[in-house]
Image 1: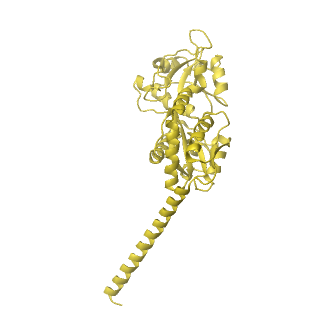
Image 2: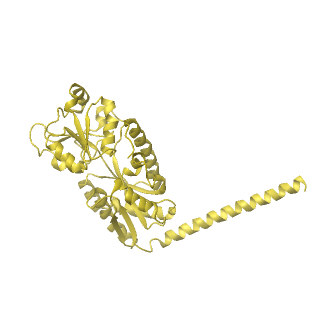
Image 3: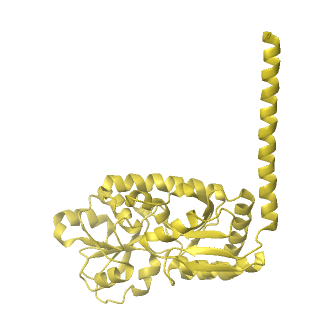
Length: 338
């Protein structure tokens, strides 16, 4: 066989392979578009991996009636709490990628991979839809706190390390990780006291058993000033470069010249990986519209939440950057996997 004829055969084969690939891609694209046009044709299930009454649960039940009406389809909110969201996350990760099983997630989505030795899901098992909202983590002081001045915290703690303790809702929680980021920056020496949730932590701080606490404003703002005395429970600083518009009188780290630490919590919507892009886009549009509704905005403010409404691409990039940031923080803090 001549070299010329061999070249022609190879060229023909390359052309056939290329056209076959284009045909397959086109068929998948058409199938995805058709699925989006028919979507939704049955009940959608939104899994909340937190208990009823939690912030994520309230947000899910706030948005789904609006989205349900717009889609003309029932959306059922189902709580599958436990194991630091792993139960609910695994359930959705193993569900069909058709847009009918969704997940309302929070920072555990990026931190759990560094906190658990055995994890039956990973962030890559999900497709990002939209970041719905974010919330601040705030350092607050109780009546036994040696100082309520953020600028004095580091120096005061070094002078009396036994008199400095702070509580968080758990090892590896965003509240804990926020403190791990700030401690070396200001030379803070303090004992970490772990609680089973924000309520017992706040009770302990108000009782003077622990000097400081870290959590989001929704958990403690109702108790500000209730303990009485010169050092009533009071917020000290927002762990972020900008002030939180839901608590505008609380200084941010940026007010003290620290502009490179962002320790915001967030709530976002995810679907199983490989869910068709047109369905992801449709869900993103509908949930963002619900987020922008006037009744939603007022409720979010009362929950100390800031609406976001990002695109799927923006949310995916955010998840990637958060994974890198918190993975580095957990490693530097020497937090061992469970």
